[in-house]
Structure formats: C-alpha cells, structure tokens
Length: 306
Ligand code: ADP
Image (tube, rainbow, N blue to C red; front, side):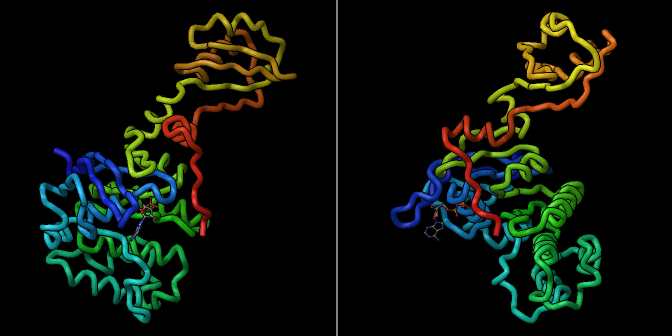
C-alpha cells in the first residue's frame, strides 16, 4: 500500500490554477521526486500533503489520514523542512533542535542528529551566523527530529555551492538508508537524476510523466552515441554488422557510432577482437532535460540559482 496517495489534486489561488490535476502514489522507503520548472505547482502540491493547504478538488492521503482533518496526527509522522523565517532570530542550532524535539512524543536524540549532520561544533552557534550549507543541514535536522516516517524536502540545495550540494545529496541518501520515505521537490535535473528512485515531472499543474529517471530518459530515446578515435585503421563493416548498432559515421579522425542495448560493451569488445583500441572515448545519452522537453513540448528553464 502506498504511504502517500494524491488523487486528482486541484488547487486554485483566486483566478490562478496552481495545481490543475495531479495524481501520484509514493511507496514506503523511496525517494520520490517532484520535478518541474518554477511555477509548475510543486510547492502547492507538497503543502497539500503537509496539510498546510486545503485542496479545492481531489484528495490527499498520508498513511490513510487526511492531512487537513488529521493535521496533528500527520505532523507526528511527516517531517517538513523549516523555512528560515520560522525560527526566532537568536536561537542556536541546539536550542532549535531541542525546541522542535519537544513537539514530539518520541523524538530523535538532538545531539545525535547534530553529529549525523556534521553540526556538533555549531551546536552553540546562532542560526543567523550559520553558513548557507549549515542552515540547510539544520533545516533537514529539524525535519527529522520527530523521527518521521516521511520527510518532505523542498528545494533543499538552492543557493548552495557545488561542494555543499554534493554533501547534502550524501546526507539525503543516509536518511533514506534509515528507512525514511522522502519527497524531494526540486527544479534541478542533476539532483533529481542522482537521488530519486522515481519522479513525477510536473508542468503547468499537471503530471507529464512518472517513472524512474532512467525510465523517463528511455521513453524519449533509448539511443546512445559513442565517439572514439581508433588506435589503428578500422573496417567499418565490423561495426555496422553488429545488431545493436544503428549507424556509423566518420568525423575527422573519429568514429561516431549510434545504437541501443549495451552499445559500449558490444563496440569495445568487437574493436578489441580486431586489435583496435577506442581512444578519446566519449558516450552521450539523452538527458532528463531532453525527456522533459520531449514530454511537455517546451524547454525547461530553471530559475536562477540564488
Ligand atoms: P512551484 O513550487 O512549482 O514553483 P507553486 O506551487 O509555488 O509552484 O506555484 C504554482 C502557481 O501558483 C504559480 O503560478 C504561483 O505564482 C501561484 N501561487 C503560489 N502560491 C500562491 C499564493 N499563495 N497566492 C497566489 N498564487 C500563488
């Protein structure tokens, strides 16, 4: 049974349709991504899951509960990332965790959580003095302090430098390893591709597709391209005869081979059998971005990283 079920969710703000018709189910233990451009309706969707907004149509179920009607019970099992503005200005990292821990009957050990998130030496530091990456990690700690079964993380790496982003990704994988189900809202393709088991592509308040990142890419094109410079002259027919190969062309000293299946393995072993080494080897494949463009008919324009 899915841990979260969103069925024909519809939500308007005045005359703006924020979420038109969104349905998906999240299985326990997975990282489920909600990926889409700015204004697609991602945050509104998760706010309905968190019980912060009441749907205008359709329904949301979290472990069989209605997030609006059963808000207090849902809060016990669902941890959401804090918005910066929700914390008192002078609170320290440890005080914030203790405060949020006090809301739950069986919270995680705040000191342990600080250690897990690499914040032990920042325990006494005031929130406003933390770096962007440290604030982000604290907000993840606050989402986890109630020992939730589900964590909702919205745009968690926006504004982080590349190293802090990679650290945060590792952290999310550690959280999942503890069995926590994660809903990850993002407009970063690479983040979705790296972290999510499955994801819903959302555009204009509707679901364009739901699949694994690889599955979404494969829907658009299963074709791969290998480019290499052969170490010695090559008889092209050796490659064109391979069942996985759909095309071979020359580009100066390089060959460009297109095909499907396990193309790199097939091509490289065949070349090796003819004593040819593939130098300067490069492989290209359709990206999640290509999948988005193909499925929505428009380009994916992420908001500037701020
Ligand atoms: P996303 O998270 O994908 O950027 P949102 O759910 O924040 O999308 O927004 C979807 C649409 O609803 C956008 O057009 C946005 O401008 C509008 N919107 C979001 N929140 C509000 C609000 N509180 N009042 C009015 N319009 C809103």
